[in-house]
Image (cartoon, rainbow, N blue to C red; front, side, top):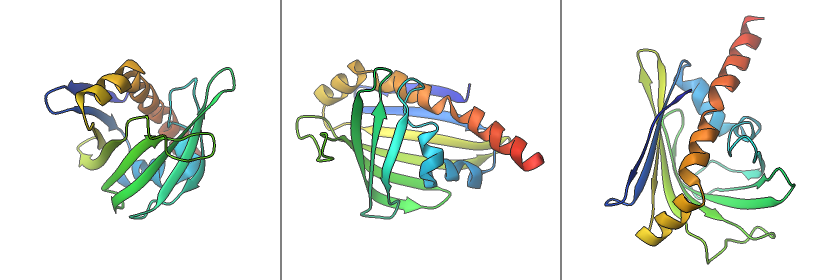
Length: 168
């Protein structure tokens, strides 16, 4: 599995996931930059994502929903704060109602994604910052830490599939 660590820091109100991949940084970046590739891993395996809007420019919006095994849709949104292609992405991450409007009664987190080159490929760090201990507790109780680890855990298969296509 690609996930190296998942650390919750209740003093700093952060959740940090580290994952290592045997792929070059430009290939790992494409997993974020291409919405069809993002759909293949964003969300736990039993809650696949569908991206309806995908604008990875500062001020841009990303809208998506995850579908439960029973067919129920759980919409979400990102507001892009900063982008450095093939290096980093910063966004606000929140929940939406069925019409795509942000849900004011649900937490919004700030997520920073950083890619770095390693001796064996690429390291991805996902750093989520919560506004309060209550919001952090709420999202952890909803399974954010486990769901994120499961989602990122799907990336190796995607990278292996694209590598085998390139060799064919």
